[in-house]
Image (cartoon, rainbow, N blue to C red; front, side, top):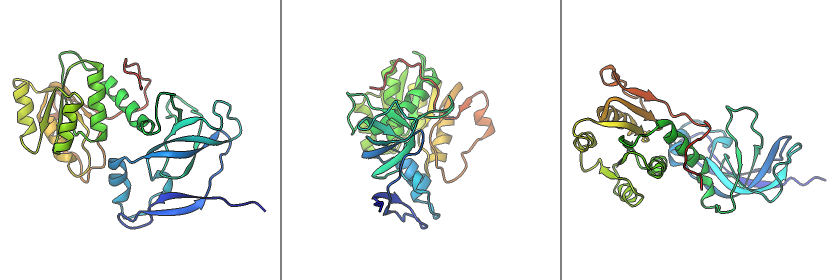
Length: 283
């Protein structure tokens, strides 16, 4: 008689903030798939709080998480580029085991399983999807040496964007947040200027720093309930001909696209998944 082995995973039935740990049958990999035993699972506060936990409706357990680092423990038919025991990163839910496609069928698809470099630890590896996104986003912004770049929001995504922009070595990087601990961390991580928006008006501060010109690039990495106001501030601090790059998500109301403010300025959606020609390696 075949034994039905169980595992635990995070689930959200109906009800706001109704988060539970449930026991389900362990999944088996099909053709072209691998099963990964989780060692570390990343909590992405914005995606999970804004997109899942605060909703009244039930959420598909496959969406309950972001990325994990673990060890391949089973392989489906047709897979020869992974072996049992390989250390990998996977876009996957919070679960003890996850089955994921191990092949990319087109250039438009994102790889859901990526091998870990020997120098990368399990604590570091789950950040790979967000870090690769930050590298891709910064590369698209094409920051020039003379550019002033403002990054609105210094949560996980905004901090990674700031660090990648600094590592590229071009432009003056200004970090903005309302929390003291995030502002302190941004200073420690090398931002050229840090503005605490709880203490001063960030729009006025940016115009003062730039002698009234405004920022050449503003990166909107806030999202959530604070997003619409931060987005509006981003437009107000943006120079004529400047670029506002939208990364933040999960606002509770539409972003204010005031026609007079967006004239002679560019808006760019996040973009993710392009080939990354940047000189910054994902170490």
